[in-house]
Image 1 (tube, rainbow, N blue to C red):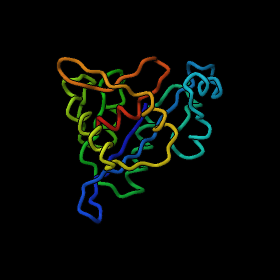
Image 2: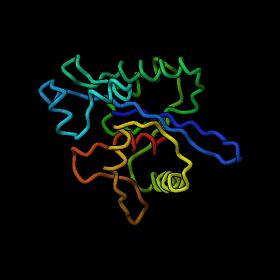
Image 3: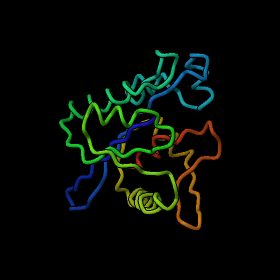
Length: 180
């Protein structure tokens, strides 16, 4: 699971740019509660990413991602940075009770973004164009970089979207950024 924030801004030349920031939640439930196994499986040094503040490793609750952890991260980030939330966009696939939990706790407006080419074509093309033009800025984030490397473009008759070749190739944060 990943959360992404997208901050539009105008640079000194009057060009609209976007700063993107992601935060991932790393489950240990299917890795014997062992971060080294999870890191090896996914190809990401999660211990380093966690030290840098780009993820939270789920060490409690049998290693599953908790709705509380995700909500608390979003809420703390929003409060700390005095943000005005326009929408919380989410992928409805396998979201469990997380959406209901966030709505109950926050009252933020939720916007469902299905992971289908027909719904993702325009934002994926826009993101790719903005990246090509150098209008997307981001931190030196190892999870985001790995996710971008694993994301491949799938072309369907109804549009394009990003995907991955294998289950171990994590692209959650790229999905979250494009959703946003």
